[in-house]
Length: 174
Image 1: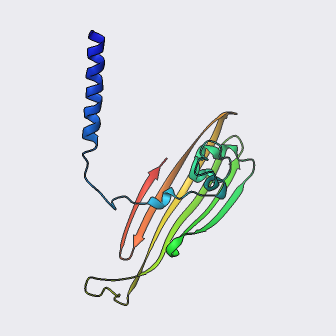
Image 2 (image 1 turned 90 degrees about the vertical axis):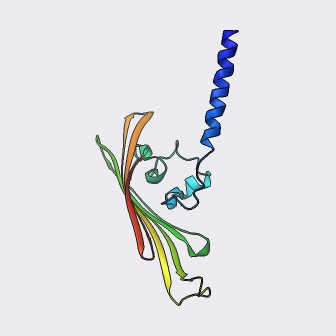
Image 3 (image 1 turned 60 degrees about the vertical axis):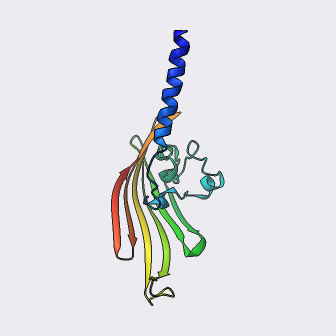
């Protein structure tokens, strides 16, 4: 009987915590650098982003930097991915193998949103001005094989976002 009461109390406590988790402010448009979620390389995109555990080429910079350890030769990757509304994603990366040290890679990712007309409430057809928006990520990656079936990797990124007269930047690590 005591165990049944304890289990019921745990279930009630767990469900009440979940109710409080739902009570958060509605924050539309408060995230930044969403362009970092755009997949890199045709193989990973073709697999529906299910590429993290099998990647073994230069696209590991995006998917899983530990995969750099399984490259068999130095590699370059250039990608231009056009999207709707004149939005383009560009990527350039280079990976180098240093025997007994690991694999290093450098990459730049860019999302160009194109030019857009400036409108205001008073001039809804446009003011005659235009603005552009760009986002960049500069990445330094490292991957090393510990044993044949296990490796580790890390990325250090500098991310910057520019829209018209505003800009923001941050450093990140994964």
